[in-house]
Each structure stands twice: as structure tokens, then as C-alpha cells.
Length: 116
Image (cartoon, rainbow, N blue to C red; front, side, top):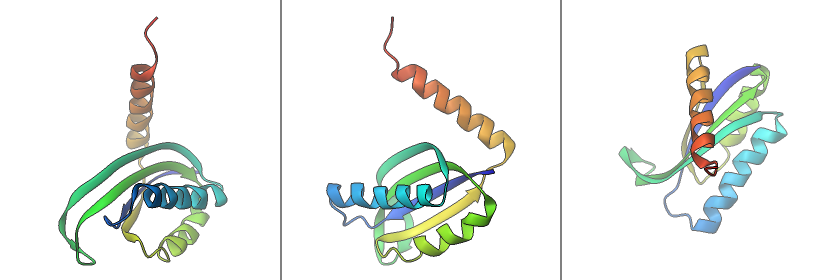
């Protein structure tokens, strides 16, 4: 199993409910392909560096997961069918990136834990 990072940019015209629904669709797609999701980071609406499908802004979500490399092409194929996705990118993470991600997850969990 390899570690991957998936960045998804949705159309900025989505309502809050539609954003949650699209997020759930991508999450279910990953789970359906037997991905083990380690971390999800929702960035919200951000300005794009250049126009993408005539849009100046997009809604960003990042998914960090583990998956068998043979399943990546199927995820890529299915994500291309989602009309509300402006862009997406799947990147294989290197060992150092995985270590940094694990440290960041641990740091955020400790920060969120109630003080004794």
C-alpha cells in the first residue's frame, strides 16, 4: 500500500449542503476503492491563481489516504466524471512526507485534546 494525497477543487457556486454532499461523494469513492483515509483537511473557498473553467475561486479539500496502487486509475477515472470538480490531483507521497503528515496529525490531536 502506498500513501497518497488527493487535492480536490470544487466549484465555488456550491451551497454548504452541496459542499458536504460532494465531500461525502469523494470520501465514499475512496472508501469504495478500499482506501484507508488518514486525514482530511477542508480549506474552504480560496482564490485560484488563474481561471479554471471560467472560475476565479474554488473550494478546496485535501484527502490523505493509503491505497493499493492498482486502484488509483479507477479513482482518477471516476473523479473526472464529477462536473462540480474544477480540478483534482493525486500525488504519491514520499516517506518523509508521510512522516511529516503523521507528526502533524499527532500535533493536531494533542492540541484538540482537553487539558487535564
